Image 1 (cartoon, one colour):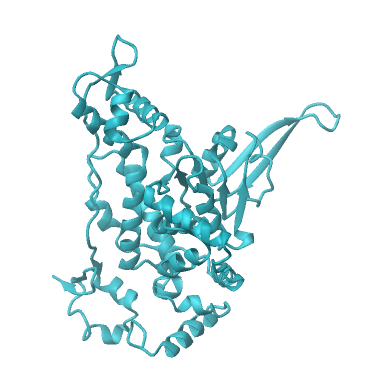
Image 2 (tube, rainbow, N blue to C red; image 1 turned 90 degrees about the vertical axis):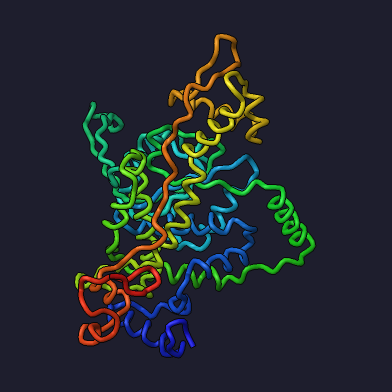
Length: 423
């Protein structure tokens, strides 16, 4: 039996029949999964990933968001040799070749001179931010405007200077690895952030896996696992996603947090990406839009909070808390001891705290004082959401004629996250 109470074979027939009615090929075994991200965790582990389960799911959702009108962007942070590119590479292996680009570097104007459709709806995996830092402006423009319109002077044909135009269409989702703790502020507003696990336990687990591979005792991931995911992801329909509870979330975000203006679209983007990925298990409304379900909010909430804790602003809060314990006079070494960070990370976050006016250097070089420790309060997302009666009916696929006698008596009632009615 499946989780819906129907025989699993019957569910498979229904899913594939619905897909055929919409003019696409049957989606295969992955279409039967109620929780594709849990399945992805297992398959990524089979592919050689050690730990990093939440991070892998975030990379996958950001990559899939390239198919949406407003893709997400992600920065994967960590020390050198921590496994940033290994994580990105594992996830990229599950993405269809036609839906991704893998870059190790890019000159400042390379993006402007790319093919018109070269980046359109692609997941762009960047091996190291330093390799594309010169192209910051072009990448930011693509992220914000979803297109680049470039006018330039050309004298290559020997006919004098001629004005030419280039158009490179997006949107695209950019996923980059970096050792930097902070980025340009305009870059940070466009990014989600994660950090790879640098704990001693993770290092031991990675070394143990490497030892198994060296002893030829590790089981290689079967090629059909990659092919199944690539085929499934390629078959997903490019349909808009409607989030019926978006206004409810907006009302719950604290208005005193200016940062909410940039955080809210990222949360919505994760919800959209989850609904898009699970579209074979999501309902469609009268406009044939995919309707996001409460499960998509739960997924997005967990992953967004994980990203939030890895962001530069959170690191500044940690540094200010440490500085408050040290008193009115402290140095970098004091902060390193209190936070447990390395020198480069401590300096990077300290510089950001200085830019924000939280910390100032004393007359004596290398000594600092805390001006104030006020930071924006932590974001608290609602533990549950409510659906209107109509949206709950659409989400559950309840026929209108059976709806009044099944769950609700009036359209003014709503459904909580667990599907129970609320008045």
